[in-house]
Image (cartoon, rainbow, N blue to C red; front, side, top):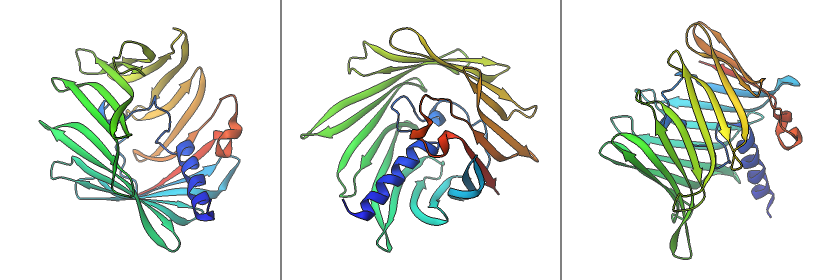
Amino acid sequence: MKLSDLKITSILAILCLTWFSSCKQNEFDTSLIFDEQENFRYKKETAFCQRNPEQEISSKAFFYDNNGNVIKEVISYSGIPEIINKREFNESSQQLTDSTFYYRSGEWEYQNSTRYIYSRNLLSEKQRYKSDGKLSHKTLYKYIGSKLRWEEFWYFNNNEWKFQYAHGFEFDRSGRLVKKESFQDEAKENVYDTFVYAYKNGRLNEEKRIILTGKTSYVKKYFYTPNGFIDEITKDGNVVEKNFYELNRLTEKHTFYYGIDPGFSPCGGNFIYKYEY
């Protein structure tokens, strides 16, 4: 493996562990379900280890269009730009594309992209293309009325599409998500795990994950400031996220990890994120 390829692989591993996106299949695009809890248009997010809060480890710089959509995201490590994500939107602020570029050998190289397809003004499909331009993955969205019912993940292999996994969604009469189920079989007959959501005073109050055996894997609780911003998130009684605000804007976020092996995560899973506007 080339040194440049090894460097990119290491970066991707860090990304999966430290940023908002997750490599776990249980995660999904919550913006499709929940209204944004914190619509802060910050220009930069910088990450630090809690044990060394003065030394920057990575950052994200955000660039917006006139409608407030993030059209470019620059990810840097130790102050050096390494990854650029570019996005395109239509006049209705519907996302059309998302392309990723890595910095290698003194120039930016295209890596992959996603295309967003809509039907009756609802997202119906996401198509992921590799650096060679070939379609490799797709995500299908199916609705009952305007409410999302299924999110299906597929990959292309040996000249045919193969099922990976799916999410099923249920909503209450107010249109709020109350259950998300994961399936690993195309027939969607066997539930792999279930996420149950509860609300209080119109805001998300609790998230509970129930695993295949029927046991509760964890319980998350959400606490808010008087202005309605997320103050703390706890998981099984431990604070896993703490937010700080000034003039009704998010300025700092602390995250905490209580897993069985923090050695797998940079900073032991304990980060400080600072925000600039």
